[in-house]
Length: 103
Image (tube, rainbow, N blue to C red; front, side):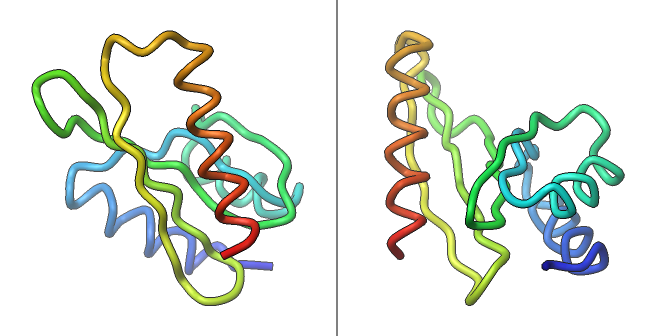
């Protein structure tokens, strides 16, 4: 289980660089710790403790980065065009989450 101090340090680092925490994935304890730090974050269960961050990238897209906390620190990025439907967007994010499980 990732401790609250580590979660806060990563949150601070990402927000300093313009990233916004969007969704915390992991155990109930990880979700609770993250929710204490980011009260409006979306939560989801996962075997891997990670947080989705996003920020504007180009004029017509948004970058999403999935940062892993359990195991070695690691991140995967996907760039989503603004014109993508919710279904397409959610599908691409799920694909990245699956890749994270095998990374």
